[in-house]
Length: 379
Ligand SMILES: *Cc1c(COP(=O)(O)O)cnc(C)c1O
Image 1 (cartoon, protein in one colour):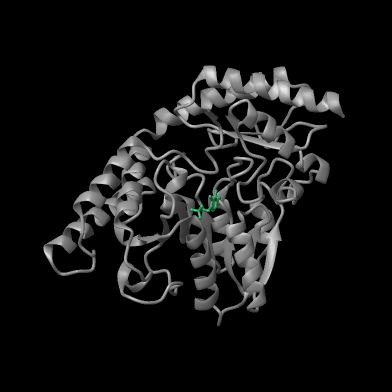
Image 2 (cartoon, rainbow, N blue to C red):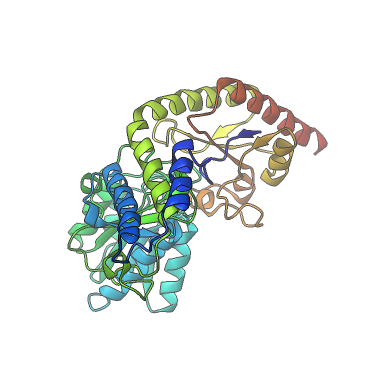
């Protein structure tokens, strides 16, 4: 199988798997326990916390483990809304956020929040000036992702953070697609809160972090024991956390190397698809995108049909976000960028890993060209 759906999830790395296996085999203590067995579990967790912090140049005390990107996004939005309720109820987010942010905004609306969604330009990028214009007295939070999961477009988060702070709001960024993939500093990007997820960088699913800048007042989302310095209750999944830590370490050490390999493959893929498939249109800017993302429209096709054809030829791709595949809704990201329903339904996203080869890309492009031609001929 040629796996080109790495924005949906990635394969657990050999190192992360080894770390997890040895945790499950050797560690039996509850990390909150006083005894040595507990201390050993605690050490494995704290090592992972150091590694996660190092990816974004944060302090260990600013990293809180969660069950993944979705929980981190929910926690950031819901807790800021609750903690800053006395200052206002207005939240600004972008219209191209992941559903973990957008649906949480919907939920908060039902709890009395007012939400403004800022639309991107045709290139998928949010204009920080539009965020500035959306600010008003009572704006308590701005949430804009670091990089988009469908188009790979990288957002100007620092300028957006400045706009948020100038208006007295906190800034949250969903960095799930960027964390461990492109250089990212919590300090430099201006985030007060930042979400990341283990399974998007070759760690196991069901584990993530919320970075909370020191001094930022937030409330707990999950109530119970005093784990995670009383901010996130529940006995920790030590093996998953340790596996995430190892994946984060590898991602940091090999970021440049992997990024270069992915970028070269991505540019090759884009050129080959444009040459082999008439009418293929790249979504988003050619340069300002994640190193592993190529997102196309293939006019005259419907992506569910293309995906089935690709799968029959051994190629795993996606029609946009994993959570909306299989649903009949077109991509909210492409609609927000100004594409029509028909265009949005023709979206195919190919996301690489550093392990993909040129031979795989050649085979995938050949399959794609055949499938698209076949569909167009039948119309
Ligand atoms: C995958 C993803 C999430 C959700 O993370 P999970 O760990 O799967 O819950 C949130 N935001 C973005 C941008 C993502 O790509």
